[in-house]
Length: 179
Image (cartoon, rainbow, N blue to C red):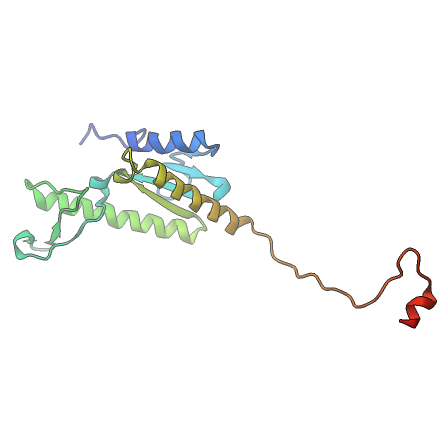
């Protein structure tokens, strides 16, 4: 696991390249923001996490069959593989614990960010395949625009029309009274 990098991963570079080419500016791995997100966009009060499907348990679900359930003294490992997150068969107990801890930590980080007024966007590795990149990034862009509007939206002040009639340029006061 020492060879696994947390910065400048291929999925993260795809997201960063797309955002930059579309005029969005950002900061990377800002330590002052809780959870140390991959991409921070202060103007939008948005933290973008680019998660690997395996390490963060994307679409991992509880097992339905008894065969897949592994029981330990303190924990039940009843998770089955998803399309993009395949848990290794060897040392399964370790991997399920690790992935579950990562998922719990992620949820806690998202909760803390939301309490502090930040928006979270999670982009999964499987959403960045060549056929899906454009659609995924358009969804990210849509969410960024919604976040921007929710932050900077002006309050609507209704226009109140007065019922007083004013003189037009060529009218006299007497004509106004005769109406």
